[in-house]
Image 1 (cartoon, rainbow, N blue to C red):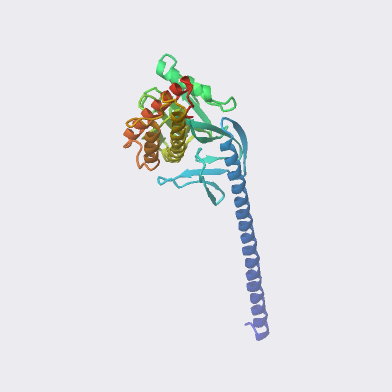
Image 2 (image 1 turned 90 degrees about the horizontal axis):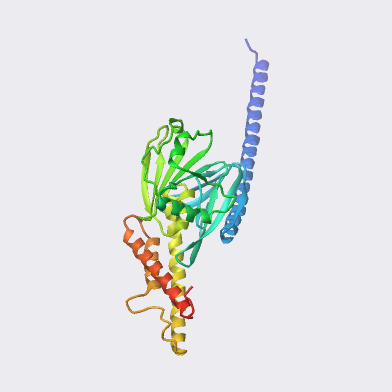
Length: 353
């Protein structure tokens, strides 16, 4: 039987234990909050730094460079309504005016950044491509097919020396042995070949995606693999210009690809509008200088106007495939403007661009 004094002693130690637990919980919570706050501050600081790096890389067109990816890596995503962000920790930063094509995740370590200008036919924007050296990119081409070979040659001429893309033929695919923790992308250049694309069963549980480029139709089809199988889900889009083919190579998926192009089309409309105003002024000046042969547009033929209108429509498109007529009209206007500009220069008239 516990006497009153013993009961008070036990009660005292219970209070001490409770108080100690409360104090420990308080300090533990404080440390956790400080750690989370410190991590959040670091994420914000790194995000700001990376935004500056991406801005610098975009402006340095035609160049490639190595980036150092921080511990924890950087994630990239675009929604179907073009909410595009990169993530460092829990901090999301919007792409804003930058046109970025990247995998869904870059692990800590090194990554390549490559900037390439997009011309239709004048430079409208710069694209920034990001890739991990550990990921495997394969360009699949048929050297015996002139269409496939010519497309490969055009693309290969634009590649910087430090951006490594593996060049293979269809017959090489079955012999490829996948490695652990490596992402694979196969890009078929004007080669019609169906799922599972000659891949061995060893790719069942690997991260694999496929892009098929049809240069005649100016179409790219993205194939996303289902988990633990060699079944692929296809989704087709359209493009304008060879730079967009590289965008399909490095973009994680169709959403990121189309979001980048929509932003590019918005820029194209603005640049074309500026060039149109400039061309109108030059034409007036040429009339004043008695050079009526320097004609920049006609009542029924105004290529810059057509570029402005179609590019603006495509920047707001809800489906590139459904707006194929806009792509065709834009392509015709671009080709016409290019010929017109060459003719003006040959006649010793000021060029449009």
